[in-house]
Every structure is written in structure tokens, then in C-alpha cells.
Length: 368
Image 1: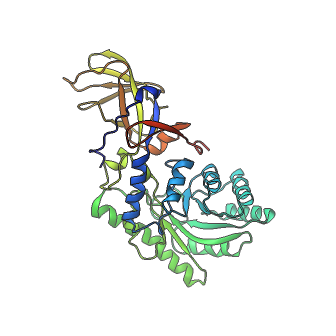
Image 2: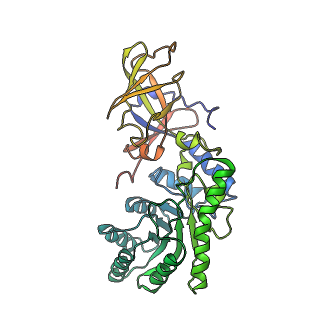
Image 3: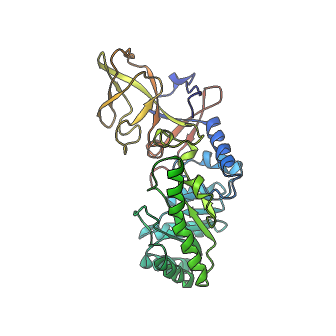
């Protein structure tokens, strides 16, 4: 997708670089697209870790999205402050983070807060903190369905953890959470792997219910597998996040009809040789966590060779025969990983449907 979209900004000379720019109408289009893919928003719990912005959360709410997923207490606070009433923090609260989550539940008593967990002592600590504060927080067991990053094993270990949560004061057992970040490929092989992964959580749900415990939710998947996971009987919600802005990391690997909605405006700051250019978007300007190629440059021709990359510099060798741009020329970059790119900035320059920068959005929940 996105090949037919003109990303040129008419008043780009007013935007200092490097800068994050967001195309508002494309964001709206992506929201419509995912609603079409899922036949509405009832089973969608979008992850806001990608955009971290009140303005985008409000666009999602205005479209009819009523429940959200996030990774940090800062993101949860953003959602609660903007009217969300069902907020799931897909990260286990540990140590001082327990106090932060409990404080949110006290401040926003009209919001249902849910967290995930896979560790008995930490869950007991959360229960004690909730009792002391006279609040109730929902807990979903994080089930390891193959990612091997976090999560309790599926089956009996998760059943025993469900029994514990169900017995503790201050907590409600809300179900299971499963993330399929380990699923690779595209097409039918990807969909098959995603379904096999989440089936482990669905089967665990059946075992929990057979033990006499209500298991209302199975929240699963990210942007790589949500379409397949949504087809699995027993999954109640899917929770992708990158779809809202999209990036080349997913866009070049997956055949989803989303469009790139967030770019980095960069400029040429030096031309050390006829075939070398240095951009002002280094590690602190665009996704510091991915190997080369770090981005796609929309208006640089030919194959790019990514050379030295520093905090504020990106040296690139141009393909032989390609005309070298001038110092000061604007280069539009599509991030390979948009989530970590957004987190580098305090604000985003918002581009309207006519290609003009018209407003600025705060990235309220960047950092932690």
C-alpha cells in the first residue's frame, strides 16, 4: 500500500528536522480499514504503544472503539484522562509499578483497569495493594504460546494461577492474554501459525472453565496475526497496535491494506562525496533498535547503502549514477519500526489532506 499517496508537505520549510510528521487523513483511513477487516470494532482492543497520543486515541474513540490496550502506566493514564473506560495494561506490574497502577484505579474510579501477570508472588503483592487502597483490578494470565518472552505455560500451570487469582481479594480474574510475536512469514503459513499459537490459550480457557472458574476474555495477537486470530473460536478480542501508523518492517512483509501514516522529515546536512550524503536523522531521529536498512527514503532514487550511523547522523552511499541531492534538501523517511520512532519525539507535526502542516500533537505518553 501507500504507493499512490503523495507525502509531499507543501509548507515543509516551516518544519525543523528531524521531525515526526503524522498524516491525519491516513490515520483515519487506517482506522476505517481495520474496522472493515474485523467487521466492526467490537472485538478490537487496539494497543496504543505505537502512537502514545491523546489526539489519536480520541480519533479511535470517535470511530467507536471502546476498549484499549497499553504497555505502560503512563499510557494507561493518557487513556483514562481522555475518556476511556476499559484499559488493559499488557505488562505485569512489578515493584513500584504496582503502586502506580493502584493509584490510577483510585484516581479514575469510573475506569475498569486490567493488567496481565504470570508470577504468583507479584500477583499476591498486587492483591495486597488493592485491598489496602480499597480498589479492584482485573488480572489476565499472560500465557506463553511460543513467544518465550513472558507468560505462564498453557494448560495446568495457568489453571492453577487462575484459581489463585480468583481466590484473592482486590482482584478479579478476567481471562487470558497471549501475544504471537514469534509468528513469522505471510499468507497462509503465517495465518496457520497464528491460529496454532492462540489455540493453546483457547484450550487453556476451556480447562479453566472446566475447573469451575469463569474465564471471560481471551485477548490475543498483534499486527502480524490479528486477522487469523480473529477467526479462532474462543478468542474474544484482538489487540494489534502498529496498524495505526504502519511501517516498512510490517509493510514489506505483510499484505495488509494499511497505509503509512507517520514519517520522519529529514534533511541533507552534508555531501562528503558525489555518492555520499549525510542526513540529520540518526539513532535519535528514527528507530534506534533495527538493523539496516533503517528506513525507506521516499524521494531518494536507487539502492541505498547504509554506512555510518551515529546519534545525529546517517551516512548513506547512493547507487552509481544517481544524482546527489543538495545540502538542505528534504528527504522523507518511512520508519522500519514506527513504535520506537514515535517514542523519540515530544510532538508530531500533523499534515492535513491538502498536504499542509496545520497543527501539532503532543506525544503525551512517550517514555515511561
